[in-house]
Image (cartoon, rainbow over all chains, first blue to last red; front, side):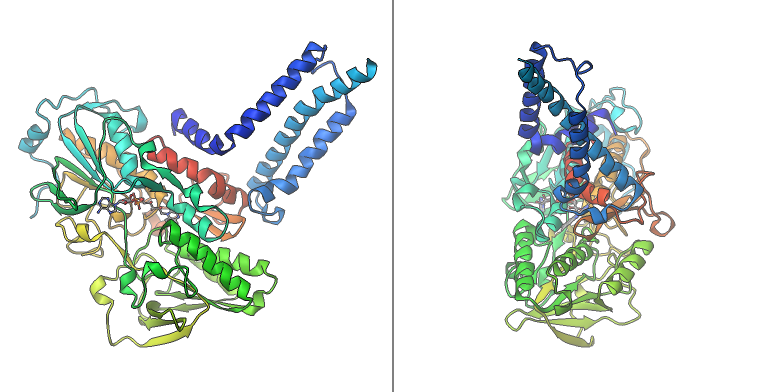
Length: 113
Length: 460
Ligand SMILES: Cc1cc2nc3c(=O)[nH]c(=O)nc-3n(C[C@H](O)[C@H](O)[C@H](O)COP(=O)(O)OP(=O)(O)OC[C@H]3O[C@@H](n4cnc5c(N)ncnc54)[C@H](O)[C@@H]3O)c2cc1C
């Protein structure tokens, strides 16, 4: 399949979530901008609690992602199923981290002030 | 009238006065460039197949005229009807405007084709307009012959416990309501049927049975419901491995299978269905060929069954206007019922300027949107070759696919083709067609509709 074909499929697949994605992006960019202006750098700030929380949120995805797709965890059966589900859980963890990490910096920044 | 499968030089010159070839590559998918022509190409039917061809040809041809004959404003994503009838999707999710997919420069006639005169290359529309074509693509899909079941009309779907996933999007919604009503009644007998003719998406009657079984199990009172599956032939599905799998699964899920019965009549008020016993020697599959004339046979013994829910699968054929034209198969298994094309090149067997694509063609398998995806580049490549007087470069493998839903939330990606008794043709090495999978279900639920729209746009 051509790149054009793949992009067309992706565009149709994401279309129902267009506004959700746009809003999510705006929130993440705004958060990062706000914290950046207060000295936040992703590589410098350390927060164990954030890491743990992001991991836990990712793990919960194993339960709610099948439900979100009108299915259940019981039907996640093949190797490919598990790879796909763990991929979804990892992506959820990463997104949770991207949101929680600057937030935790903001909170510690406020506490220091 | 018999014609040679290649166009004569005179015919070529007529369509292509100035038919200059703009560095047309041999069949090579999307990388091919354009062909300058003055030909008039008519595409009858703007469903999955017709719309895919309109978009592909609009990109490949310069100077010619492409006319699409399609009566409907709304495009229906039919593979979604199973999801609607199973209570998973909202009906709106399956509908879009046809105009959204139509490329610029294509003439769209919003009318039904009424007749085709293949010898004089002329189509008459219901509104009276006449079109002359140089090349014709027949993509008018399937006719649902509910009238061959005595007492049955599509208007009954949703009433008296009758469902039919095939009866359009309203029919799919009403089928869901009929199932819901049956579930709420807390008990009773559901009869699922199959048709004694080829049908579009031969897996759909099975999928409807499996999703309803999921819903019955969810009530927590599965034992209060009886489920019967009445099949006209010995098999339930054309792919042998899947056929055996479905039979075993039905047995283990308490579905009473009865073979060699076809639904012949219904009495909606009495909630009774009549089944004609078609004989144990009948090797009907979902893709066998029963002709309309053979439906009313008095010598067939019948049984009457009471039902609380009945899933009706109507006999199917090409539309009457195709059946009444010279384009219909004259002999062989598809005689009188389906378009007469070469199942590999998709060119008409007697009229070389005519191609067929999609559900309308006479082929042993293939009435799926997945087949349309595989057929569209073949028709594109071969039509352009015919327009230049070249040999046909492309061949269809018979590829077809059916995400066989085996319960709400799981499915198997069944892909196969003509070769080796419908052997599997998996697209993804990491998906085993014999395994039930959540990821395949997600594909069906989330990814196939986007892929289908890409096919319509001629990009997949
Ligand atoms: C319940 C159900 C479930 C399905 N599930 C799947 C699935 O899971 N996977 C899959 O791949 N496929 C599935 N399919 C099959 C798939 O939808 C069809 O194979 C596909 O739509 C065929 O495309 P087509 O263009 O040949 O026919 P259609 O898409 O039906 O288009 C035919 C077009 O011709 C037009 N037409 C009709 N009569 C005339 C006339 N006289 N003049 C002009 N135009 C006319 C119609 O308006 C229509 O737009 C399913 C189908 C159904 C009904």
